[in-house]
Each structure stands twice: as structure tokens, then as C-alpha cells.
Image (cartoon, rainbow, N blue to C red; front, side):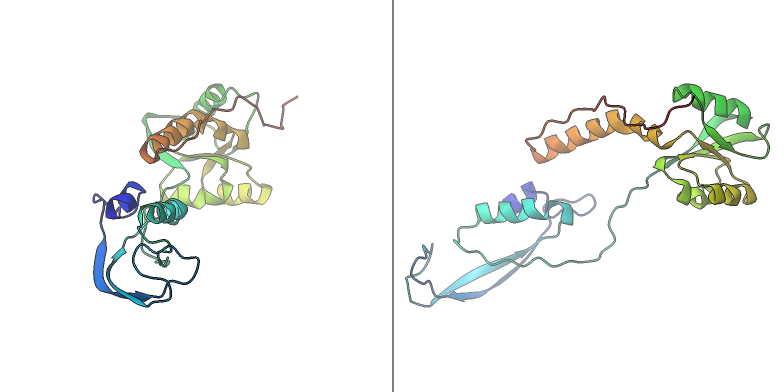
Length: 223
């Protein structure tokens, strides 16, 4: 049972795997007509020494863990309880922050962004295009609401899409230069996502084929 739970991904804590807690006790049950008990007789109460096994797992694999438990358990109707615990879990940010090898002007950097993303145009929120920038934050899609997080990371310029008019003024007020190349820049992550999904597929034995989409869903064009 512990092996089945561990193979399903339960019991992972930091750099440890297959962690569990066991408690021995007595279980009682009475099989009724239609039951096919592993132990016991129809209409007779049975007392069995049992071991309760407790494991933790992320909610995302709950169905897999329960099914693995049911498949491995010798009982026809094993009893189980799923309890939500609000422990600290590993989290991942939506964006990235990095530092250029050497400072360059905002105007030059903006031109580089336009070229790398193969864009016909973009929007720039800045008062001085000659400003030297080196610390860069980026968030694909609609990340304008995270601009203060970019400031906390001491970014000189923030690349993201869907910047609103009033938020643009807030950005200017707080001294952050922002490049808005559009929401669709997030499409650059597709190859990396497919790579990550295939890694998870191997780790979890998923019977799934991941295909990188070649469809352009950007509704905007510059004319």
C-alpha cells in the first residue's frame, strides 16, 4: 500500500519521498448480502487488526492517489478520509527578473524587444528614452497589475501586455519604464511548456501526447 501511494506521488516532502505515518488499531464491520469480503462472513461482525496509513499529497494529484489506493487495497470497500491541510507549499512566480551584462539606453532596449518578438509595433510608457536600464522584469500576457512587484525587484524596465491608461500614469508616477509588446508575447513559452509537460508525463506515466500549437491567436494587427 505504501509503495502504491508513493508511486502515485503521495508522501513527497522537500528532498524526501515515500513519507508516511502509521497507526495500528482494530476495525469492525459486518458484511451484508451482496458483499464479497476479503475477510469475514456474511451477517457476522468481524474484528480485524488494521494499520491506518497517513500520507500527504498536493490536491492536483488527489484523484490519482485515491485510485492507486483503491487498486492496491485488499478490501472491497476500503475506508479513507481526505483532509485539507493549509501548510506552506512550493510556489512559482508568473514572471522573471534578470540583469543585462551592461546598461543600455531604454530606446535601444525597446528596439531589441521589438526585433526579438518580431513585432510591427509596441507601446512604451516612459518619460525619458535615453534612460540607462540594466535590471529587466518580464511577465507574459496581462501583467500590468504586477508592476509594483517589478519595482520591488528593483527593475529599471518592465515588459508586459495589456497596460491600462490609468495604470500607465501610475507607472510613470512611480518611475518605472514599461514596454507593452502586447498580450500575445506569452506564446514564446509554448516550447518550454511542452518540454515541462513531457517531463511530468514521464514522471507520472501519463498516457497523453502534447503537441505545440502553431495557431496564431493574436487578434491585433498594426496598420
